[in-house]
Figure (cartoon, rainbow, N blue to C red):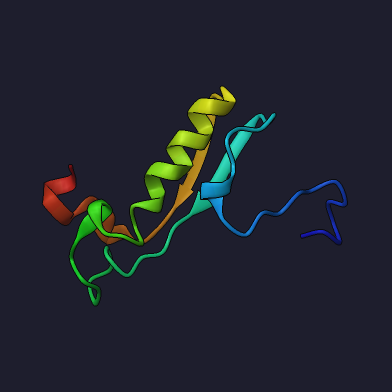
Length: 81
């Protein structure tokens, strides 16, 4: 990504960010707790709970657009809740 967008700042752990200036927050999170072959813990799982960190960062940054990516099964666990 740095080759195409030189000003891009890449941080290894979203939990270390408190906020940023951005128009869009985009990200994904580990699917081990969500995938069909996974643990079935849903978004409350340790790994998949990073979804809430993405929301926290977006809220603290005041962005109006969030792009989130994960496996389709996320909508099936706990009846989509």
